[in-house]
Length: 613
Ligand code: M6R
Image (cartoon, rainbow, N blue to C red; front, side, top):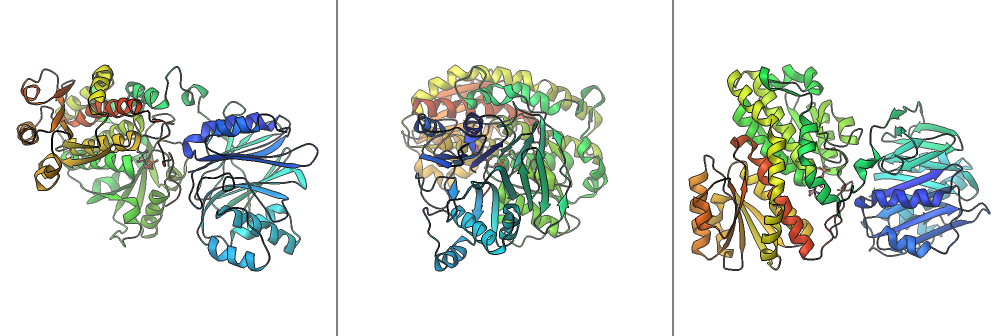
C-alpha cells in the first residue's frame, strides 16, 4: 500500500521518479506527489489527487530540475485522497520532505504533543506527524538527520517505509523501514529507492533489501546502514533477477489480461525442476531440511488473506486427501488476534503473493513467538514473508501487477498441489503408481490451461448477458468450493457486481432465497464425484428461474440441457479442477468489468499489496 521512490545521483531525477511511480502505481493510486531539490537549493513539491499521469500533466511546465528527489503514490489511510494529504510532507520549517508507506499508529498522541509545542500541520495524515517529530529531534539534539530519524523511530508504533530529503543538504537522503518494504538500488555514484525493485530495474541490477528496523544514510557514492538500536550493519548487495519485460504490458491492453494469458507459462515455471513424472518424484528443495518435521506433523495451519486464503483452502482438500495430514486454514487477520492454540509441534504455512501483507506477517510473527515452525509460500523473491519464514517455496509466477490476483493464484495452487504430493511421498500415503499417474497429468496441465484460455470469446459473450446484474452467486463442491469463492471475489473486486461464493449444498440453507430471473448463478459442474449432486443444485436454481452459467467438462450433455450457458474445460483428474476451472472465471470477471467500463488493473479502493492491517 503506497509506492515510494527516491533518487540521488548525477542524472535528472524527475523522469526516474515519475517512471518509478508509474511502475509502483499498483500499490495505491488515489493521489501522487514528488519532492525535488533544485540545483538552486529550493525544495519543490508537487502533489495532485488522482493517478500519476495527472501529476505528470500538472508538473509539465514547472521547474523539475534536480539530481535528488522522492516520490509517492498513495492509498489513503488517514485523511481523504486530496492534494494536501498527498505526499511528500514537509517539516515545520519546510526544510525536510518525506514520503511514507505504512501507518503511524500512535500519531494522534504525538500530534497533540507537537501541536502543544507550536507545530502547524497542513494535512490530516499520520505521516506528517513523523516528519515534524524528526525535525524537532534533530534541532533539540543537534544531531545528523540520520541520527534524528533513528531516535524518532524509537518513539513510533506502527509500520513504515520512509525516505527523506533535506533542503540544507542536497546530497543526502535517509531511508528506513519497519513492516513496509524498501529496496535500494546501487549504481555508480548513484542510488535508487523503491517499494519494490521495479523502479530501478533498468538502471542497476545491484540491490539491497533494507531490513526491518534499519536506517540507511545515503550520500553521493556512499551508503551506511544502522539498526534502530544503533548497531552498524554491513549492507548485503544482491543481484536482481527481475527482467524489464516481466513488468511491462507486452502488447496487452491490461496487465490483468497479460497475466491471465501467461498462466500456461507461469504454471510451467512453478513446476520446473520440481517434478519427475517417470519416477513419481516431487522435490521441493526449500523444504528439505524440514522433511522429517513435515512427516511427523499432526496438523498444518495455513495463514493467508484474500485470494491466497482461497488457495490455502484448495491446499486443505488436496493435503488431507493425499497426505492424510489434518489442515486448518485461517484468515491471518483473525488468527493474529485470536490467541490461537499453537505450539512447537505445529507447522504454520503463510501464503502470499506479495510477501508483504501486514496481517499475514503478524500471524507468522505470532506463530514464531509460540515456537511453531513457519514456512512460506510466496511469489515475490526477497520480500518480507520469505525472509521471516524458516523455509519455504517460491511460486515463480513472475511479477503480478494487476491488482486482481490471477497467475499468482494458479501458481499458489500448483505449489500446493506439489506440496500435497510431496507430503504424501514423505508419508507413503499414495501408491507410487498413483504418484506417477498424477505427476504425468500435472506435467500436461499447462497445455490444458492453454485450451481453457480459448474460452475468451465465450466468456465475453456471457459477460454481455450478466454485465447489468447487481448480484451473482458462485457455487461449487469439493475443491470447486474455493474456486467458487475465488470466482466471486474476482467478479466483485473488478466489476463491482456484488458476488458471493458458496458450497453448492449450502445454497438451500439461505442463499436460495435470493434466486430469481435476475440472478446469474455460476456453477462449477465438472464431471467428478459430486457431479450428480451439483446437477440437483442446478435443478433447484432453474426451478426458481435463476440464470445458470455452468463450467462443465468437455463433451458434457447433461448440464448443457439445464444451463443457460456452458463453458467447457478439458477433462482431467479432479485434483487439477482448480487450475482449469479458475481460468474461465477469471476471463468472465475480466470481460464483465471491461464492459462495465471499470479499470481492471486498478479497481477502486484497492491496492495490490496490503501493508496495513
Ligand atoms: O499478497 P497477498 O497474497 O498476501 O495478498 C492477499 C490479498 O490482499 C490478495 O490476495 C487480494 O485478495 C487479491 N488482490 C484479490 O485478487
